[in-house]
Image 1: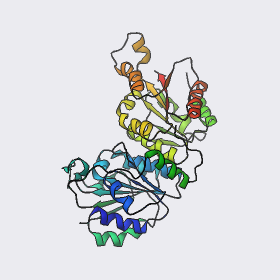
Image 2 (image 1 turned 180 degrees about the horizontal axis):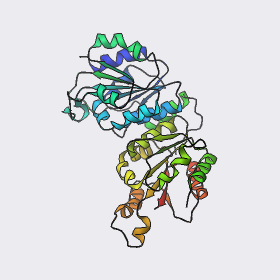
Image 3 (image 1 turned 180 degrees about the vertical axis):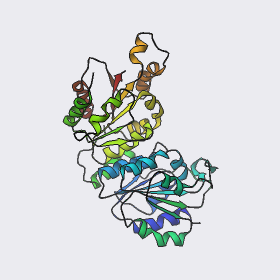
Image 4 (image 1 turned 90 degrees about the vertical axis):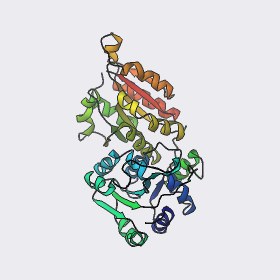
Length: 193
Length: 160
């Protein structure tokens, strides 16, 4: 087993020019490891929809690609998005950080914690590139292969749960995050009202 | 009444890049035109809340999607809609089929969809217009152009 910090630190060292979308627990850790304008912290969020956001961005920028850092609780809320991801053949690497808990609400177990098999769910959705890592050394050894080809890919990372966590706060306002990301993507006409 | 080829032509003229949808009986008649060789990139999602997240990603990426769903799906998608419109402030445009609109007006249905659709749009603070059988794709396009110019979210409620 590895901590979320360890898991994300490995990824931060290998990440290229992809957009990275964080949500929930990962949004509290990733800003301490990366400050790229291509980072987008999906807070405030609609829980479960980070995968959708990544899919839309990947369809808009297929060559760049998107890495989505999702939690197991978020994933369970939107399992259908696995099917949509496969259907669109989108360049998304979806990383499921599975700690079996809703961390920010006090550490209650998620439905099916320890039994739900995210790799099998992804396979059943017709995702072709699926990886499972439950140890830090295996993840360190496998991350290059994960990132060596375009998505769709699903990476199931089994990580330690943490208790006493508060809801993460984004490093900037949503409006500022949107503008920063769009500048980084070369978009000049900002859509916000 | 809006036919598929007219809808596609109007959306293209508006610069729409993608259509994200889950069809209902009325919207479903547009399938052939939307998915045909003269159609638009069509993204089929599994739940309507998903449609709002995908649309948000496309808009962040500089594209101009529209969402086509039924009112039942609008009810399902509330939190995703709230986030995209009121947290992210993105100019989402949606076409929502209102099931049993005419039958309800005539007192000929027990369907509760028409009772709640417009109050819910007002509760989410989404400006909308209702298009009935006499309206055309040009009316839908006009609504799209207006909300794009104002950089806000908006909806067309399609009476069914």
